[in-house]
Length: 400
Image (cartoon, rainbow, N blue to C red):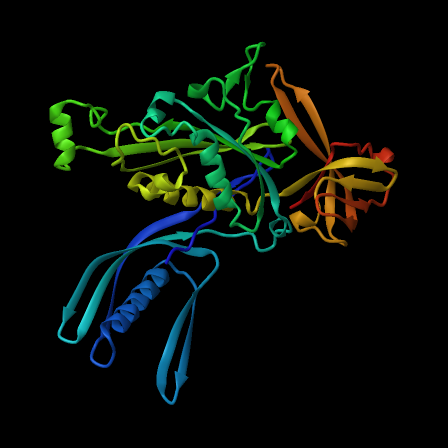
């Protein structure tokens, strides 16, 4: 049983961060095996333990019991939507006579979602770029040099399972030349910037990119060809652990600013012959213990990205202005319907005293009402001539 959690992140100077709360709790549940099978008793004991874990955190529960002819057929436990169980560990299981006792460690996340947010009902566009590899030689073991595009494609597949994101893979592009210092690099004017023109050309609200920091073996001598090394491998005594560490970056597609970054890491056994070339994300790769560990990590990344972006304001560019009629770059695929309303914002770019480009939004205090929706674009009207409030192409429509 795995229920994911949401972490709210809001952008620009007027927004704030809201962190999730996570706790491990240890609880014990019990059940009788006198009139039911061991598996049924174990399930009942687990339900009792989970109920205690959630109640200990002050989480609201709803219990629905289904009874027929005086017999309890099913007991369902419903958890409030702002609480999530991420992991369950069985720490002790003991049968004493006809009484089964089960002790669990439960990892619980709590946070406040955004039930009143208009933005939550729209799918936000995400451009997923290729990943850079910090130490290319580490990909030689197994010929994993395709990790740049293979990792992007694998994350894309995982993100496609989330309804609130509209993902476009562009793995042929990579942001970082100076991989070690990513996501930053120095321009010719020696000012620090956070993204490249690729972001501005993408048209997406968010851009995901990253760097694979480490794919090295725990023991680099594991695959040496000496008699000793070969003997250790044949006796299964060699250290075959292989690390995987990556850093993920999320840029705002409108300002080009880095708005979030996080590190993810795992490891697994790499029991593949030194001369075997299986490639990253191949069927043979996923069958390895190392590939399986990375697959689980990718699922975690997808959930985390979805949770980070779900409650963020929905933004789309105005692509055409004609009096009171505006056309914009989002449509039915993003969940927009006729009659929806968006706030209109003017966008400004300027350079600060350090020659760094900044991005600013100004609310013109008028709303657009959607009149037409197509797959990837839409149109609507505002109550005042666009020229009178200086609304132009590339200004923004926002739902909060």
